[in-house]
Image (cartoon, rainbow, N blue to C red; front, side, top):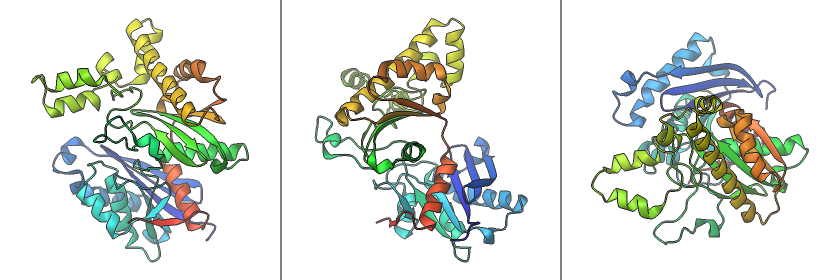
Length: 359
């Protein structure tokens, strides 16, 4: 592989699309394209936004004087495909069909692979990939049990960032990710805590719609009996109940904001309600880390804390004071999804990791 490999990274979000050009590991172009609700509101389904978002990307690359023919690979944020193992996947026809049909849910990330494939087909030798989508599933059989056969636990978590941080930490201490036992806590709009055993996430809370700690906008696990009573009370529609769990749960329900930075500032200014809610959130994160330590039978090499909320030393310390006896704790603030995607593509192009086929 040439020393000046160029990779186009595409990461669609609900109201924006991030794009970047990496030359090897170095980012040489980065742009966050904002999409107005007025424009997006014209589309009935998220996948209907495909042509619009693609054309905007073309326009941004043209304005930046980046010729498409200089791109060696295109990698998109993985969407809600069927459960798959960790790794880099070629975007093939089977994957495109699943992303378009949205059988496992509609999410802006479904557009990542679709747009990547459409751009790659115009280039002389480039391929399109996705890497470590949120549906990465490496759960042990025992982790799938919920308590009733009709409700199997499944794996939806911040796989891309968790895996990238775990590999980066292992590299920093001259070890292989596949040789370590790690607990990784991603603290963002959603919170997921994964037990990484020798390179596989063998257990993780499904942080999308109701499992594990509450977060800035998600309820996490709720008392099931009380939830059922509310659902059948006749006071709420399905949509209203779901929004209590995703979007208007967690901090949003308690404090009326999903801004953890604002809530922390208010807590430090003397707002006891804000302080208690944040302490409760940290308490639940720590409790989940403790649970994952039992999954690894107490053999934990390190606990890694990452995500946007990891920028708060105050909040991290609330977690650390409860878990530091389990294993050394390392904090890696923020998340670099663009860099993680580019790294995966480069490893695949260089033959350092296998390019998998989606089936």
